[in-house]
Length: 342
Image (cartoon, rainbow, N blue to C red; front, top):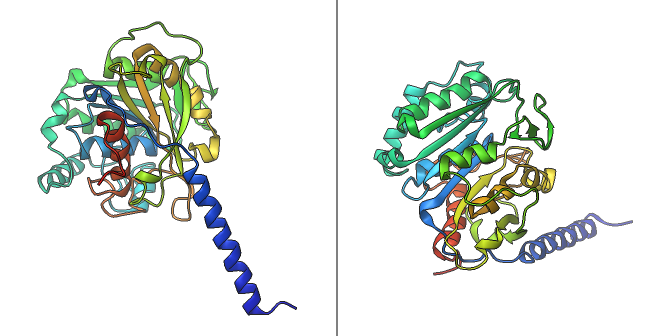
């Protein structure tokens, strides 16, 4: 019969082996290349929790981010009071709709404290907002609150709001994904129009090349380990897509795309990335696309970006662990900065 001491020893060996295997997996991914992309063409975008995180990046570093596309999310700072606020006021409205006046005052105070950037920078930004009319996850009053929020931050002509008629919770595409009215994995909805195209038309202007049916570049994994020391939630790898014309020193822009809850690679593989239409648009616009990834955990079982403070109370500021990690990724791609540099 095995003694308790022997069993404990075997368990320790098993756990060490498991950790070692995980470490080897993380190290096996190539490093993110240090590029020098056009910093004047850097945008963030996200769906659901990714939409909240996109706003957090934009507010934290408005002098670096040039614009944002927000799909099916509520306003920045909505869930600072924790997960109950996230569930009952920033998704559903059981506690009432988000108070945009209070959230704007909270943002201004955060800016004055130096925890996010200078809000005057937002006057130069372009913002795209997508609302799904039949969204069972983000209540219509919540998605309207983010519109009212940005109406006080950016000039009216720089804000574009698009509605998906009878659309469920997901990323809208021309003809890829589940039926438009459904809310189902991989949360890509065939709604008869391209969210990728509409958002990029607004943020970056019209295509410079013709749109092709299939991506011409290569989607590659890269190691997120150099960027994830501060954030336990980052996955081992993210994805980078470089159009053929962006392989050399061409002046290409950059878009960072943030998945929603239950939409990371560990849940849906590459389905969201490949069906979204972003890769084809990248080719037609000379844009590099980066798709960072979050893993699920006990504190984050659905693999969401941190928009309610599960990792840190500073989650939506410059000191937020995931904000720091994501900034390291875009700095590497924009300026040749290396996360491992002293």
